[in-house]
Amino acid sequence: MSIEAIFGLQLGFSLLVVALIARAYVAPWLSTLSLHSALAVLVIPHMFRHVGMSFQVPGLVGADIPGDFAAAAAYGDLASAALAVIAFLLLRARAAVAIALVWVLNLVGFFGLLNALRQAEAIPQLGVTWYIPTFIVPVLLVTQIMMFVLLARALRSNRNCERQVPAE
Image (cartoon, rainbow, N blue to C red; front, side):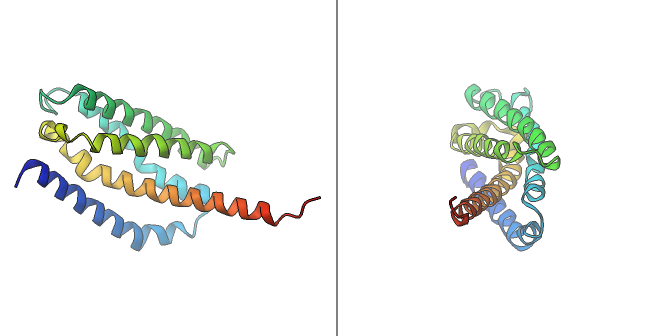
């Protein structure tokens, strides 16, 4: 089996397992929480995205890792981690801007992950950082999808409430 096939198998299997756990245990529990509290829980794994800076450490990755991939993944993850910490603190404080910041975090983080995953030429050079896209990224993707669902429901709910208010 090729390295790329093993990578795809591990990534896919991890996505499946994380999605099953999220569906069976995490989503039902989150449904009992307020929007701010549920989002705060889902932001937690993203506060650890600083681990992506490992792509910049010689010896952890292969010498021929594409520089564009390594820099974009490392600094994109660091920016996402910083946004996640700020979003977490604002969500816990129930700040009005917290929901908007979660949208920003989710969009920046989600498209950053998708961009990194599409760069298959980096796979053979991942070295010991292999665990990041095959284990951590599935957790991040699933929690981001869950955040998108919660944010979309809240947006839809707010729009429905606005429609029901009689005009003066």
